[in-house]
Length: 168
Image (cartoon, rainbow, N blue to C red; front, top):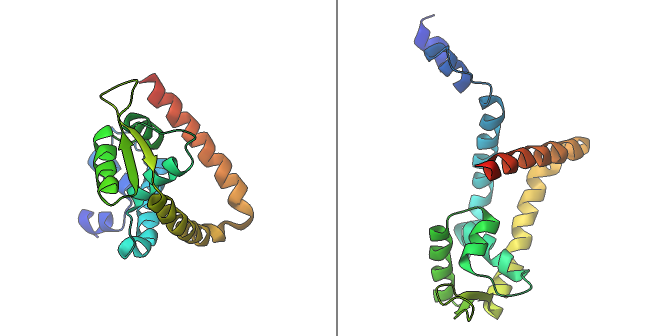
């Protein structure tokens, strides 16, 4: 069996170990499954959003606004969602155009608008979010008794990542 046929059945970590034995590929043991899970999650949600009035990122923004105790500014939404201000700004513009949110001048800072959910936005969230939760529940149903262990491990991983990102 030649090198190429051996590598075609190998994992990405094995590819790198063969190409660059000097690299520590152990992070791939954690990051690889995370990426695979994210891709599978996106694929599972795709049919839900095909004919929906919202995209997944739009729903994420609207959910934040749905439960906000006061109007939010785009920078705060971006921080909560851990995404760029530019992405949130584009999403807010689309949502405003469709009547799901309103932006009002911020008396404390003229550069930042106060964002609130409209009635139509609340209806859209209340229609879409339960459907997304149903898909997520179906995806996680196979965990059974291991669910608590997985939640604990993911919480630990999130905490480690948050500390590292905060340290810069």
